Image: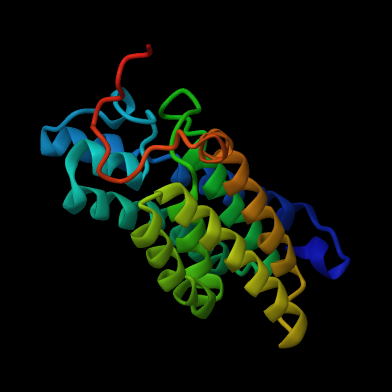
Length: 219
């Protein structure tokens, strides 16, 4: 992105805007819904949290399909970053493309601006930008979920840890300063998209893995 180096030219700005827009569309691909239709299972939007990410896919179709959905959602973030690199963009464009894919996942144009929480695509983007950070948080993510059975808590803990680790690495190594934007922006988005989960965690009403596929009716 030319603006990063202090020079601004229209063709580069147009290119970068197109990349970010495409990343947003890629992020919105509703793999959870597509998989549920192919597998002949319930639409994840009709049960549990109503989201289309891996956690609700687990409730809807079980671990095998949830894993596939999560991997495909992660690939959306990876594809967005790879696209930024493919057109000659640097870390700045990669970061903006990654954030656009995360937003697109949670506010999908294919589902009336609804979707998942953005965890998988944010991790997939990080896997391409700084793979070692993405791999380093996997044990923490899995450990928190195994101990608490709260998928949301695992996601929030891993996201916050990734942000801190990326920020420290950006300062200490150092990495391109644009990674500070992803370290902060990615965490803000993930926490924002989990606002209802955070409220339920604080009130002790959050769903645990293994909870019924259909929420009990209100009392």
